[in-house]
Length: 453
Image 1: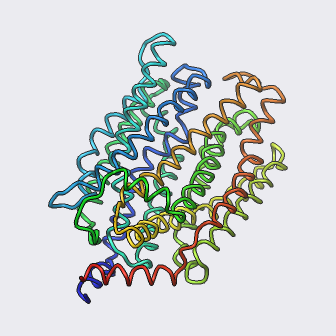
Image 2: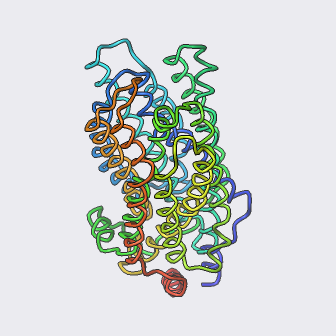
């Protein structure tokens, strides 16, 4: 039994911690481009309306709900000499890179043809992203069963992720100009090729520097329907799902609106290239500080305080005038630091909820647990896209035109009031989460005992 406990709760080397965390740098070479630039690319470069782009994104994300769950179930049932989840980092790296280049390719087609192209390439890219990202997320739940190690590797993950996001928000527009030399269509295509190659190298590095240690106690493989039933009855998981949903809507609204905010409201379109990385760098600091704060606060308590702070800082944004650049920067940094601590905490909580599920039902579905958790983020981006599309359409937004007073007010609301309301709602969702430190110690002890038997 001691050997089993030592194996499951192994203290990880910094090489493995950094190797795992680096993976999310690669994923943000894709995800941040989609959340920060895709809508802007579609309306300003590709040549379709916000309504078409938004509708297409919603349909694809609905389809993706099924691919997330299916891939999670498939990964949980994968057997290889390298484990269940690590091989997907190798298998999916190249297809993901190719699909991203196609997504940012502008064919010489009419509006209808472009809409079809956008739908097909977006669906392909999101599916390829799922193939790699779901197993990567599940990997954090099987590297170690030690709660402290989970906190550290998830902090490392999001330090890497935010650094990747900072690189993308700082460098993408510069790369477009450098590669395109005045031709934005070519610039965007080559820029995504650059990010795709870099991400593929990173995924190989993560594969080589990680190891799977936690295996299920149950010997029989449960049915997929059993996995889904377990999730629906897993109250801690539901709490994390709702929190992730609210925060992803919040983040996507603010990130997607930033380019419009500085172009039309502030009148300094180039400043967005400095403003977005400020959030990411502040988030790096927040993610890095997470293991320190969890020494003094339960994860649930800490998250509630962070979301209250995020709501207040977001609401303050509404009162900043167009020339209040310094205030914008200060609030952006404060929001970034607060939200930077959220992902390491919630992904550690997802791993804990997978342990809780195994403890309660005798079945372990780590990838399914993370797939459904990640789906909440994708659903959040869908709802954010719907909100942006509805507001832009209702208020008469016109690309590359002087905006009306109502349109400008809508842009400001998307940066401030609506994110604040979402942050406050997320606090209520956290009341459902009951897995504190003492509870998890008992759960791990019981699982160790079952494994020994």
